[in-house]
Image 1 (cartoon, rainbow, N blue to C red):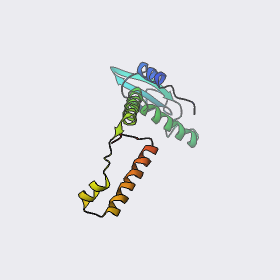
Image 2 (cartoon, rainbow, N blue to C red):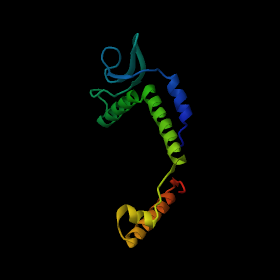
Image 3 (cartoon, rainbow, N blue to C red):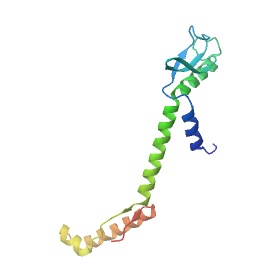
Image 4 (spheres, rainbow, N blue to C red):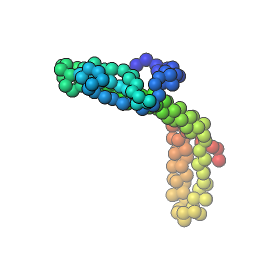
Length: 149
């Protein structure tokens, strides 16, 4: 898949007919076999027509179903939806950058502190501290910044 130009997509969405788009199948306004994407504003604003999308269009069933799916997708992917998705993407990228820039603070206890806090033996406390050191190493290996204590 080619690289998406998110800025161009945003600009296109901002220029397109705003608001929620609706899907209507042909009745009296246009060909009965087609679907019309439109917006109700002061009156009726047609946006695009999808030929053969109506279930009773008379077209080959596979073609009709594909056209119906296309019409439903176009109506759902209206500019408001696209702009909301782009805003969510930008917020997520910002949050990821904040998290990646942050350093976590993991307390590092001495063998004596572990013995005092838990009441366990020196061997247990040494194993606990070694496990803690290993965990810190694995966290750093995963790319998470750890503050020195």
